[in-house]
Structure formats: structure tokens, C-alpha cells
Amino acid sequence: MSDRRTGNAIPLAIIGMMFFTVGFALGVNSYIVPLLENALEVSSGQSYMILAATFAAFLIFSYPATSVIFRIGYRRTIVLSFAIFAVGFLLFVPSAKLQSLPLFLVASFVCGTANTVLQAAINPYATYLGPIDTAARRISIMGICNIIAWPVSPLFLSWLVGKSLDSMVLADIIFPFYVLAGIFVILGLLVWLSPLKEIPFGEQEGDEEASDNADEGKTSIWQFPHLILGSIALFMYVGIETIAMASSVDYAVSLALPNPEQYALIPSIGMVAGYVFGIVMIPKYLSQSGALRLHSWIAVAGTLGVVLLPPRLSVYAVMIVTFGCSVMYPAIFPLALKGLGRFAKTGSSILVACIAGGSVIPLLYGFLKDWVGSQAAYWIGIPCFLFIMYYAYIGYRQKSR
Image 1 (cartoon, rainbow, N blue to C red):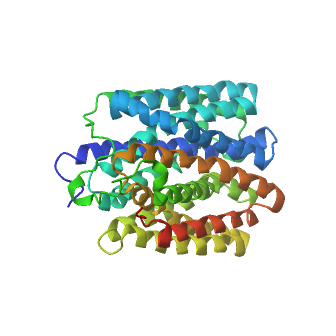
Image 2 (image 1 turned 120 degrees about the vertical axis):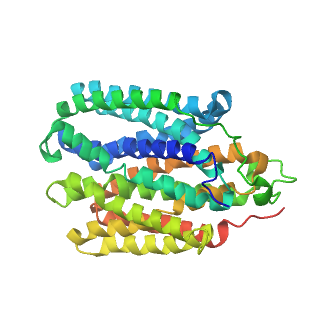
């Protein structure tokens, strides 16, 4: 069954633009983290609190965000997220003027709240806008839109400022964040006027073919072990992927490489290549669980490359890590949701909450970096990928009562 059936192309294109904005907004962090280290003379652990503030919002607002979808629908929820984004970007202005780390954390938390609301809408929308068994392919396409936006942020901000990151001061980012706020207001208006259609939350197309009645007789969300284990796997995946994507510029700075903002492209290349691989291979040649198994091994190999290769080569091994990460979200999300039936709303909100892994694990990486250095701190990825590998082989299987 084709995902591009009549009526789906335009909604998928709009959702693709939303995934791009998610990546763009998250990519701002990869610019802010090393800037704060230099401008405020804080430790790596303190600067990575920016990521912690951004992703902590997912833990707090994921379930309320899904309730908002039920009350006002997908389109209005997306418009609301853009309004919150604009407020968050504007808060970076007084943060820079006052050179206040707490204010930067507040601004990042507001942007994280906007990201939570937006992802609560677009992730299940992409999952359910077509058969569940091909959801990984759809989300891979969306993922390309997301990942190519990550390096755009630091490059766009550097272009607006007209300086390299290593020569900037905090006052230089004031004008760029006014521009970002204006762009997101315009995007919100465009979505408001768009023909984005509403679909029933928790009911994928072709449900009569995909449903296995796994929710029959269940009375609680905690009776789905594959969802709980999938949530843990997603938590770990988002955490380590955020390190690979958001720390690339900071990693280049720690190696004293020239023009460090240009290294934001390296992890994105690996992610896009992995997404293309997933689009071609899933489900024709690889099942969603099979792709997850393969990419878990690749991610482990890439992590070993980062920590064991000479420093100036290790930065390129990050590309292998992100190639491995590429299909993890597209595979874990539908595998964990499969068979939830009437529990789909709660299950989806739990999965979105686990994006908070991007708050915890990068923060641990930041403090590890202060202790053992940026390269050795990448060892944190090994236990994360090993658990994901367990889920890919065993944990995803639905258990009957």
C-alpha cells in the first residue's frame, strides 16, 4: 500500500516543513553551547544545561500537549507551537544583554516547550498518515527534513552575525534572534492558512489490516511491555543522538579545529545517508525491527571509532554514529505503538515524554567532558546503544497476557 495515496501528499509536505523547523530550532543549541562556554566562561557541564533545559520540557508537557491536540486539532496546535517558539527566541535577547545563564536556560526551556507541543502533533501524525508497517519509511522521510535543518542553524546565525563563532560576543546574537522570532511568526501564519487535514489520533490508515487486537482485555498502559521498553530505548536514543548532533561544533572547538561551526555538517551527513538507506530498505528488504538491529551494530561501531581513533579523525566517526542513529526513532516509535489500540494516545504521550533523554544524557556527557575530555566522554553511548540493541532483538515483541 503506498504512503503517497491521494490526499496524503500535501499533509506530508506540510509535516515535512514542521520537522525541518524542529531540527532548525534544536540546531540553535549547537551554536549557543560553545558560545556560552567562551562568553560566560562556564564549564562544559554548565553550558550543556542549555540542552537539559530544552529537553526537560518534553517530560513536563508531553501529555498536556496531546490533550491540546484533542481540544483544538493538529493545525491549531502547530500554530500554537510557533507562537511559543517566537516568545522563546525573543527571550534570548535579554539573556544576551544581561549575559545571564539562568535567563538563557529560561529561554531554552520555552523553546523546548514549543518543540514539545510541535512534536506531540507531528510525530503521531506522520505515524498514522498511512499503514503502520510503513511508518518507519514515512518518518525517515520526515527525519531527512529534520536533520538537514540542524547544521542550517549555526551556519545561518554565523551568516547573520558576519563573524566566526570563535570571535563572537553575546551582543552579536541579539539581531539574529529578532529575525528568528519573526520567521517563526510567519511560519505559524502559513500553517494557519494551510490545507492540513485532521486525522483521528491513534487510528492509522489501513487499520483493518494492521490491527492485531493486542489491546483486547488490557486495562492499563503498563500491560504493554514493548511500549515501556520502547520508551526506555527512545529515551537513550534521543540522548545519544542529541550529543552527536548538538555537540559537533563544541567537539570541534575542543579539538581546536578552525571554523568549528562548519563541523555541524558532519553528523547531518551521516543522518541523511542513514535515512535514505531506511527509505530504500524498509519495508521491502528490512523489517522495522531488522533495520533497528542493523543500525544498533553500526552505532556501536561508530562510537568505538570516536573514542579510539586519533582526535582529528574521531570527529568524522561521529558520522557513523549518526548513520546508526538515523532509523532508530523511525523504527522504535511505531514498534512501541503497535497494537496499543485505544491506549494509543497515552502511549504516544509517554514516547514523546521520553524525548527528555535529550535533557539527561547530554548533561551527563557535559560533566564527563569536564572530567575525562570530549573524546573519552563518548563512552556514554555504548550502554545506550546496547540497550537499544536488546530492544531490537527481544524487547519489541508484544507479550500476550
